[in-house]
Image 1 (cartoon, rainbow, N blue to C red):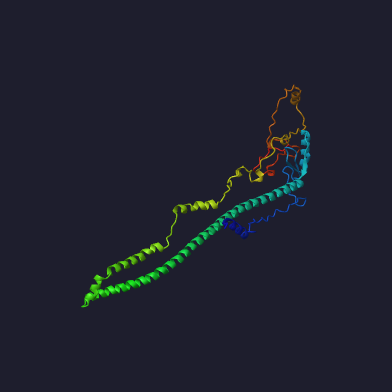
Image 2 (image 1 turned 45 degrees about the horizontal axis):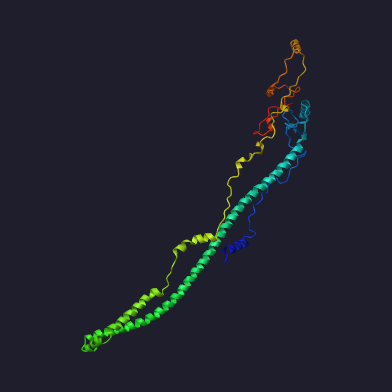
Length: 355
């Protein structure tokens, strides 16, 4: 009997089609939201009251939200810098980002439940392994019980036969002993009567004592015959101690080590708004404040200063001015740094929008 294979087949038959399938989330973000003029978020421009963000400049080192008035000013900035703007509508960008994030969300959802299914698979496999071990143990116990049951039946059969023979011999022997005992009892009684010679003469002239020795011998043979005919259980202690090793030689469990650490701490932050920036929003000259010269009447001192020879050109460090120190672009128009409301609080807020 191949115990292990039989248990494997029975377990597979019992558990066929019963694998655990994790339930999928019924999320409400499965349908993409399409942005158009009807549902486009209205974000008021921080610099132009009454105007709303309609575009963004996606030129290198930009990513700047713009309203219709900002677009005109920002275009001039690129012209002055010798670069080209890349304007895209907020509607298009929101749809692109929404589609991409929604797809990523679905991937993460599938990955989430794939991991849960993977964990469930480990649990199911562990339960299956333990159940197989118990089934094999039960089979081995059944074989052992069957073996010992056979021994018990054999002993009962042999012992019953021996007991029957002993009881038959015992009945005959007891009857003869009883009759011999009665005869000797009568001899003692006769010794006390006037007929004492009828008992005393046979006592000396017969084989009375020798016959009694024959009885004693048979009685001893009968009593000593019990250890000879009785069943005796013998066990080889050395072989019994090897039984565990024998079981290990026919039943083995192979374990596969599963790493308990896969460097989860090396994953990026779970907050998508805190992701590492792939391009700096600070080093671009487009972000520097625009220094607008407003024509005004010059004094005589200023004219004299212009006529003086200029110093040799040197590397001038253009440090950004504070917001309240910047000159307006035109009357009623403040300088345009990127306002913190357009960026998550966890991001570095660039100090200036070069308008």
